[in-house]
Amino acid sequence: MGKSSDSYNFDDIRPVYDSEVSATIEELIACEGLEEALRYVIPLIDWDAFKAQLRSCKTKEQFKSTISYNLVMTVVKLSTHSLTISGSERISKDACLFMSNHRDIVLDAAFLNVLLHDIKHGMTQIAIGDNLLIHPWIRPVFRLNNSFFVKRSVSVRQRLEESRILSAYIHHTIQETNESVWMAQREGRAKDANDTTQTGVLKMLNMAGDPDTLTNIMSLNIVPIAITYEYDPCDYLKAQEFQLKRDNPDFVKSKRDDLLNMEKGILEYKGRVHFTIANPINPKLETLPHYPNKNELMAEIASVIDREIYAHYRFYPCNYIAYDLLNHTNRFNTNYNDEEIKEFETYLQKQIAKTELPNRDEMFLRSKMLEMYANPLKNNLTAPSNSPDRGEFSDSL
Image (cartoon, rainbow, N blue to C red; front, side):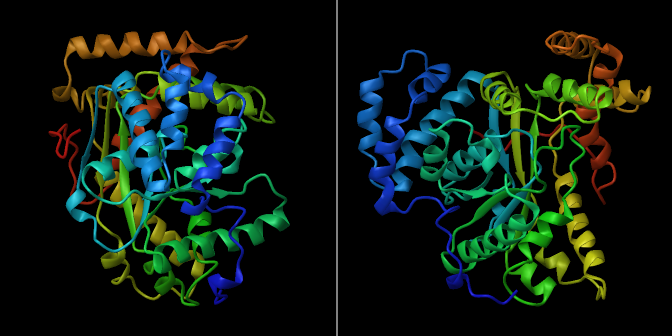
């Protein structure tokens, strides 16, 4: 720690500068597969008109607020019942590190940015794993969308240095360029929706900046966000992966699997989607006792983030039904009716039927899917002074 951000070269991971936008758009237009990918979302797109619209963008802000915004809102209209946000009054004017649970590979950050745009808050820079750069057009799209890359496909020794560079970049972005950043609380999605902040993420954030750990983490102004999707279109794929790993401990997902998760996550129905801006954690960090052991301090900071996320989920009938079915209780039976139970049971069977397994274990798959919908509620019950309720939306799109 202590090394100046000026000592690092961020060119491998940073978004484009505005001066590079036009050249990057030409690179994007030349990429094979871009038109085909767009037609998944907008089948009748006028390709020539779209290229002209792309070329009219001269800054990242123009690209994000026109091209990206319109594409994301098309996905919202096609695949959600609603997209809403609450807690926006908790966002300070200072740049911050938004840290959320992770449900969808692409849409978590994309949805957040259109919501922030609509409440007149600046869009964030976005941390993206380089494992998602499956097609040539994906890299320029992410860079134009103000994304920076987390290098995951490197050796253990290289990864340590790349983590230092990544940490320095995040500190530089928040403290020197005064831009907010979004990143997930863990590497990859919590496939069972048991959302926990990885201390490894916090340790990475501590690799650059102030030598004092608590001061350093507080300088990032972490603001947790609780993300809730009523339905996860990838739930059956996640359950399928659980069975594959159960049956073969050496199973590893392929790039094709990542691509399928991206496609289903974007295109399939998600129902109601809600983002709650939770409380900035610095006031709680200020009250922490002295921890002589840095690992214990990191674990406590992770716990503070977790509790904020748990306390601010939004719940729907499927969450209450899943909890009661999984635990063989009627604890939350006032939050749903018989028709909603029937609808959810039908939904589960339809999703399980989509799995492609030679020895499909339907009871196991069902149990895993119930956990996905029940775990946020289960964790919410551990959050202090919080009782789950269905609530009404605010700051609605």
